[in-house]
Image (cartoon, rainbow, N blue to C red; front, side):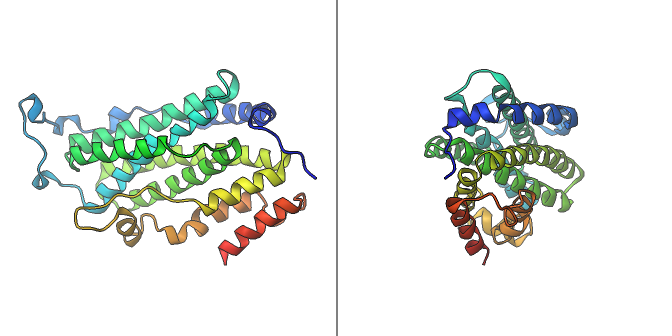
Amino acid sequence: MQTLLTDRELLESLAEAVEENLRRHDGEVRDWLPHDYVPFSDGRSFAFLGGVDWEPQQVELGEIAAVSLTVSVLIADNLPSYHRELGKRLRSGPWWRWVGRWTAEENRHEILIRNYLMVTRAVDPVELERARMEHMTIGFRRPAMHLLDVLAQCAFEETASGVRHRNIAALQENPMVTSIAERIAIDDELQAEFFADLVAAALDLVPDQTMRAIADRIANFGVPELMLPDGRNSTEVLAAAGVYDPARTGELVFAPLLERWNIFSRTDFGDAGVAARAEIEHLRR
């Protein structure tokens, strides 16, 4: 029977893998400035400062791009909330440095997209802020997750974000939106690689325990959605436009990671790991 490790033991056991991946990430990531991607000369004050409040006729951005970027704001705002789960247990070392770096990167995404949407008046700023506050509150109430669940969840979510932003860029809405989406997709993919490598290290350390977390996160995976004024939801709109279709999550998100982790060819699973893998195979069918 395999030994089950506590979150504290896992944090200590995986610290070297975090350090190695942090060095690799720092070497591959390229610094960029969010304000470079925002056409501030197009902006003007809202009524509170003597200007004009948002009105639908001011919108020039297409609906698909606007909905896509709004969902991106919500995800970028909420993804680093997982650091609360880690922050309960550590205050220093490679884990803390990574969480700080990751949070800063995600905040940069949110700052960029939100500034772009506000300056160009592409969405209703009041509705965006309400949605952001609601989504963050729901995220805060999320049931506590163990470390391996957090790592698997983040690997899946960052991979999905990379897919979504590549498809937003492919819309060719306008040069600026394309540049924004491509820039964020690069970060998403590097972040996904970081978390995927930690899951791989965890699989080598505690295969059954990690396999259980992977199966649970696959079973409960979902992308945040918005209800649109006409009754449609953002999931339906983005799926129809080919930006992100939940029906293809298995193909585009889960399958590449499961292959990377050699899930279906591993021979180091005990009964619990085999059972968790069988659950994934059932979901695939």
